[in-house]
Image 1 (cartoon, one colour):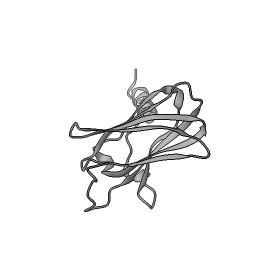
Image 2 (cartoon, rainbow, N blue to C red):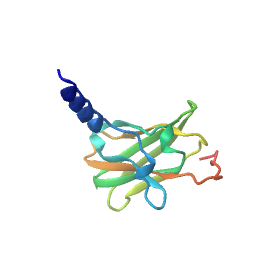
Image 3 (cartoon, one colour):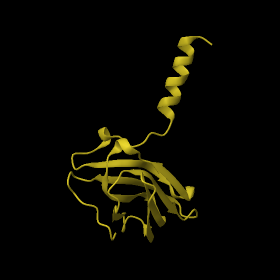
Length: 140
């Protein structure tokens, strides 16, 4: 295989691989989309975030279409701790989002979203950046 062909294949693979959230994805209000519309039928979705994405104050799971039964969301932090948030709610047009405060003061490694596999809909995941000097809420 030639050098150019190898480079082309490598570039194609790099573009198609899932990438952690980056700072350049942030909106003016410091909200970053962590996952594009994801089918609820996947059941459990592991969303890589990573150290380079910064620190977040809130995570929001947002309805995209259909009906989504959101069971729980777990946040795995860079220091190994896990924040489990029981949701047990439907996301639909009337109830389009579930939001919770992130309790860790360190970076997020992974957000794990668990949905009912029998629900026929999709959702997206967003996070709001922690502003410099903002403290984490330990009780949430």
